[in-house]
Image (cartoon, rainbow, N blue to C red; front, side, top):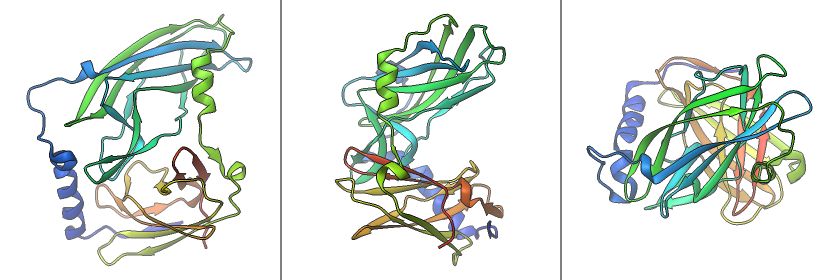
Length: 282
């Protein structure tokens, strides 16, 4: 476990200023005023099927108007991370989202990560009472982007009958469009070095030995602590080695510990991604 003291005021101010300014920066677009953009995205739940182990496989399908984009779970340099509230559901004790391989998107020289057109997010649901139907209700807070980047709020709901056993091919295709595991991608070594920065931030340098996956490769670092913000990494490749450098700060300026087993590195290429769980010391 690595530990960092609270960040200094100048580092906090720098991050806060960047957050405030990100919308006007994207394509030089003005901030939208007194308008709603829910109409540019259609969201629906695909009821899916009940699996042999008692869990239920459903999906959230997002269909965006032409030219509009939405974000992956980690949106990139700037963006609005998606948030889901499933507390209005019934007979639901757990939910796990599977993310299809996203794309790197250039927005006026700023890199974001997400989807355009239609995307299906598989949802693996655990019922509170086995053998009973699930009533799934979600409030979605999503960022959508074209000339402007704005948050939208959408509510979805559906009854998921327990007796349906036949898989939905749309959900099956989305499950197949997942990132490779480290083993599948031929990752032979992963390590992370953590060190304190000059302004109270925690610096992280990750090294991953793996074959090329095509196109401009970008390493995205995430933690299992939602209160820790991770800066977009600077990624470069040297032979079979990918080097990613980034900074971590607590969103409230507090001290924090880094759980190495909770670090997650996604290496994103032209049409492939590799999902690496955990990052031991180098």
